[in-house]
Each structure stands twice: as C-alpha cells, then as structure tokens.
Length: 431
Ligand code: HOZ
Image (tube, rainbow, N blue to C red; front, side, top):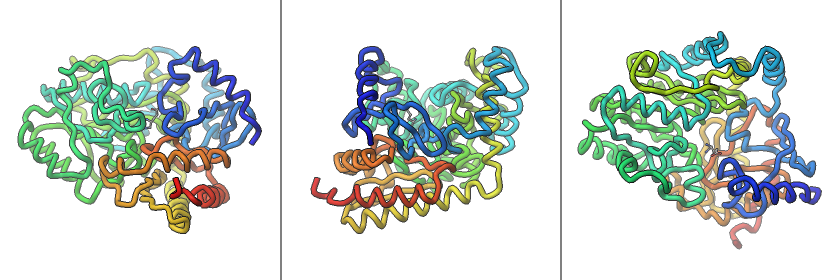
C-alpha cells in the first residue's frame, strides 16, 4: 500500500462541499472508522484508489456489478449507444426489449415500468398498491430496506441500521403511522397484524432474501405464508428484489422459491451499473398507473437508452449456461473458507449465505431476524474490516450489509480472501 495522501486530500475537499463528504451515507465508512476509499477506477473484481492502491472489491456497487467492473460487453454497448444519443425523453425500442427480457425471466411481471433508482421503484410500487386496493397501511419487516421513501424509514436496515437511526427525521408522524413493522421470519407476528388490521393493509413489502440487515434467508414456509395471508385479506404481496433480482437466480428469488408476488421491485443488476430500476407485476394492478390509470408516476430519464443498453448486455451475459452455478460454487467456497478461518482463530461468527450474497456476522448464535443480527459485535466487525482493507480487500463497510461476489472474482481471489481473513481474524477476540 502506498500512503493515501491524494485520497486524503480529495476526502478533505469532499467534506467541504458534499454532505458528510458523500452522496449516499454508507460510503462514509463511519461504522468502521478511518477515511473512506476514494475511487479512481475499477476493472473486473478490482478497484483502485486515488493513490493507485489496488483492492479486491466485494462491494461491487452494492450488487449491481455482478459481471465485475467495466465488463467488455457492457462497455462496448455503452460506447455504441452514446454515439446514438444518451437521452431521448420519448419511447425507444430498447425499453421494450429490456421489459420483454424481464417479463420472460419473471412471468409475474406482466407489465413493467422503468424508473431510475430502487427507492423510486419501491415508492411507486407502494403508490400503485394503495391506488389499487384503496387502502393505506403497509407492512414491512424490521431490518428490511426498501430505499428512502417516507413509508419505509422506520426500523429499516442498510444505512439506518449502520448508523443506528431508528426512524428518519422529516417523516410526518401521520405517514409513519401507516407503516407497520413485523419481525422477519416470524409468521405468528404477521398473522397477528393481519388479524387486527387486515382490511386496511394495502401490501406487504418484503425482501425474499433479506440482504439489508446483512444476509438473512427466509425460513421454510415464511414466504408462502406471506403469499397466503395477503391473498386471504385482499392485500398485495410485493417482493423487493432490488438486490436478489437476477442474482439469486435468473429472474430472481421468486423463481428460486416458486412464489409469484403481485408486484416486484427491481434495480441494480438490470441496469448493468447505470441508474435503472423497475417495478411491475399483475396487469390489473399496473393498469392503475398513468397514463392507463389515476396513479401518477413519471420520470424524464426513465427508460434511458444508455441504461437500457447496459441492462440488456448484462442480462445477455447472465443467460450463459452455468453462470449462476459457477458463481454460487465460488461463493460456497468463500463461505466455507471464512467459516474455517474464523473457527481456527476462535472467533465466533455466524455466516449466512444465499447464492452469491453473504454476511459474516460477529455473533455466536444463529441470525434469523433483525434482533439476532443486532447481537453482532460491531466493533469486532470494524476491526476485521480495517485489517482486510489494509491488506487490499474491500468489504462493505457495515455489519448490516451483504458482501457481493461477482463473476470477475476468480478462484485465486477467493483463496487470497480466505488467507487474508485468516490473518485478520487472528487475535480478534482480544478486542
Ligand atoms: N441499497 C444499498 C445496499 N443496502 C446501499 C446503497 C446505498 O445506500 O448507497
């Protein structure tokens, strides 16, 4: 590692001009201490800071870069499209093609609407659910994260979990009262909420594999129970697949579990690194959205042609036979290696994995919901993070996020990560 002088100088300027030095809070590294990485460039599974230091990157743009950075197919598609115009503000065939690809992969998405971020997609899906049902309440899960719209900012995961923000300021109390939180993987709690207020509930929003309190897979029967209870009460089931879409399987987690939601929220991978998200689902529900219906939602850059090209070229790579099997096999090796390394060092950890998503929780017990995730020793996590970082491995800078493997991470990268973790676990319980 060369001294991070230039990075430090840029960070100092960032603090003067950007809020907290960043454009999204989790980038500030506050939960792990030290100054954050300032990126100069990225390629494959690697990222370089402003001082030329190289890191193996397991943030992968929070999952968007499943092919790795600057994949040649995506880069050349972007280059070609840039010559043809970067924004039209009117309809283009690329939007139709990407929607067709998505519907082909996720048949529950009978109609699709593209937007520019996962937050926008989740917010819009909730508005459509409220418009369709004529109901106001939404049920979400403690530690779940559906972006930063007002309705989703209580007991939320991701940055709120990282910074210990129980509920965001600035959300009117009357809005917050419309959101009901249940513990993840707890069917009895959900049934109780529905028994009391089922007729008022527009929708349940759930990550089919929770990945914003760290990775917490659903227990057998949990998602089916959500499907059943929403159907029984005339509410909608909304799967937030911003992280799991096209990651857990071709299409998303709903294909892996065989449970079709009424609406789906997608983001990250479908944009191939460009700002794209989508919501969609049952045609009768999506018919509520303007111009077909009275639920208004719009966007100048929605369906942006550069973003559509990046998404189309990414999905084409994911269709390669064996893509998910190979990625999962490497993630399994990584999880097994980390488990063994922690055990040998006498560090109690719970490692949760779903496909190529994984989290090393620094806790003794099983992690099956937000309460158990919060038992983690976050100081120990921070020390582990810093040791890995100093040795050239960039992990997500929070205990409550997923590590994202990409297809660009090689077997040698996995072996190096495990060996580095072995060094970093050593003596950790002394902290
Ligand atoms: N939604 C991302 C994963 N939790 C975090 C990205 C961000 O907040 O910047």
